[in-house]
Length: 457
Ligand SMILES: [Zn+2]
Image 1 (tube, rainbow, N blue to C red):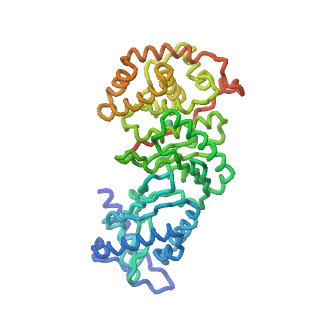
Image 2 (cartoon, rainbow, N blue to C red):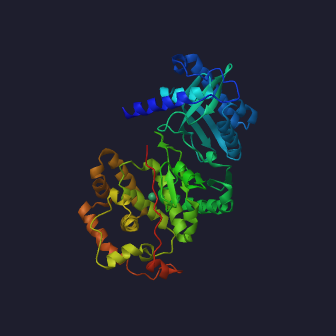
Image 3 (cartoon, helix red, strand yellow):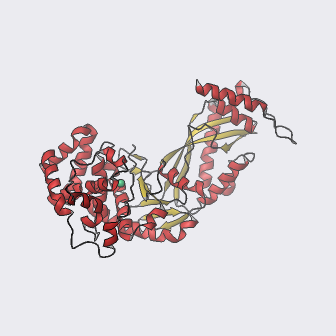
């Protein structure tokens, strides 16, 4: 009801607006009549599909004239934005770029507004942009756009991507946020902007160093070529991550979908360069190895895999090759345990959404995984991860019990008691505390930059 009222009010305002002054109004600038708002006929849809196909092919072929042919010269700001996009992607190793028309938008308010603006037969389509970058994308990843197409003479032209309404917002890629620079590492493809140009090389080197560490634990059955995005604004960071994240997030691992064949599509690490680069070297290494682990394990991770196992395993790999002792790496939890407050249970999923004790939550998860690896070996920890994830697909409530029984031959209470008993010793002061600035680490521990793994699909 509210929506109908809002739409009606908008139309009243729109009706009062004047045609552009000083020029002859375009032929179709009057209020669109019913026929003009009809969904596209089969012939129109086919003609638009052909245009979209040629438009995508032009970008892939670096054919600027061909690309511009698909754009409506009357839609000035969109035209400008799309010309810029063509230049922005110039250095990317794209191997696929395709627009696939899905369905026509039928919202009459949106169609009326777009038709009035363009003054001709207008169609708004839900379109998938399917694109792939060399090596890092085993198959194209698919993103939702809502494109406005207008009939000019005998051709259809693209005239906008924001006419479908607030609920159907076109996805924004890194190319929508300015010219892109590319740093091709051995295994990392790092994409960023001019403002981070001096950091892209060191980021690629860091990711290149970290990938073999992840593989040494998890094995080689994942795409060890990884896309890293380095946005230069909070707006771009949120667009790449698909959510509003806080500025204290150093990095996020995201993926769109896992195919039935086990390929992870749209996998990427999105860095928050200001936060990441403010960390010391061990913390940076931890963050990168942690996020890479999320990508490596993505195909084997179920939506119902307990967060403590997902995050704890990523931290387990993240801490490998670190010179820090657990007491130095987890100072807040160490202080709690020294004061006699041993965790009563493994962290619940909801604990990872609670800012209080977030550092301790991650560290409890890490130390639970570390305890398993020390007790039965690293390979068995991997087996435990896969077993629990498989079991969680059937029954989330019993998945950990199943994993503990099959892999550790322990009941959950017995495991919990053994882990709790291990914590005071694990977190006691250790001579292997990290060699530099251990005082600052214990007295004023930097807040561990939290991350989120995108576990859709
Ligand atoms: Zn994580």
